[in-house]
Image (cartoon, rainbow, N blue to C red; front, side, top):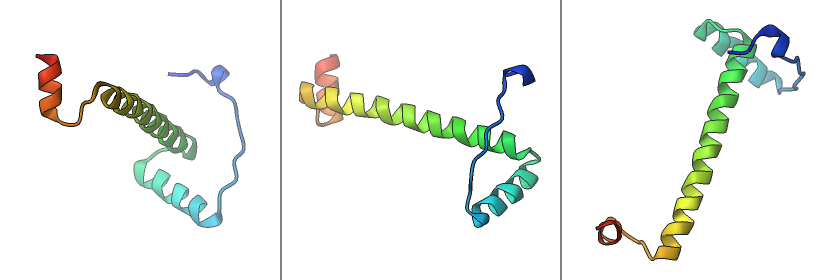
Length: 77
């Protein structure tokens, strides 16, 4: 976990409706807005990383002629 000295304050702009949603969700989750947005960013990063992994897998599958699980079994043995 980061210590306060390692954190930086940034300003972001949100549409009013989104800001109200952030406030409400933070309250419901018993978190600060900063905690909520840090969590949201982590989820975004994770989804992006998995999308990259999937893309690499799809490229590799095309290159190897893999179109089905049967093809995977045939190649893997």
